[in-house]
Image (cartoon, rainbow, N blue to C red; front, top):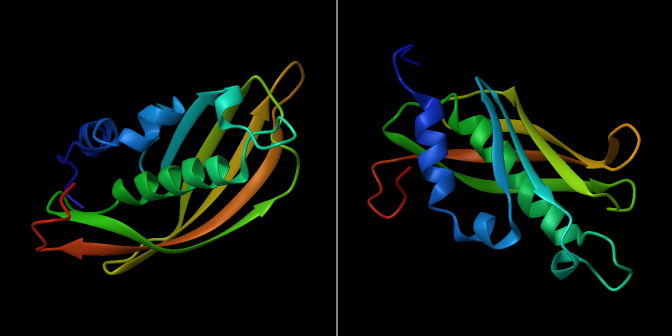
Length: 147
């Protein structure tokens, strides 16, 4: 990857074009080479019947964090589509805020694998609530899938 490429700006712009992230109140809070963090506040509109953060919302934010971590290691003329992920929901989604971190496990020119971790943040230390392994396909030359 070209060191002069501003992957951070490409990620910010792409994230800004995601209505789903805006809908759930997610914010891009950290962008590094091969690692991205997204945070969102607790919102009762995003809970399931027990008042806990819905597993679908946790999965959505983890998928996005993993995808943007992968986005940081692809060329500027490429994009990504998630082709598979597995989520382990390990603890109830209870907290004031939530942190979703995606990190590259295996970069590649066609397939990229990332791991994600979701944390609930409340009064004490952050608590791990979910993990994800995600696989993304690098997409080139498609007008309908850009950035």
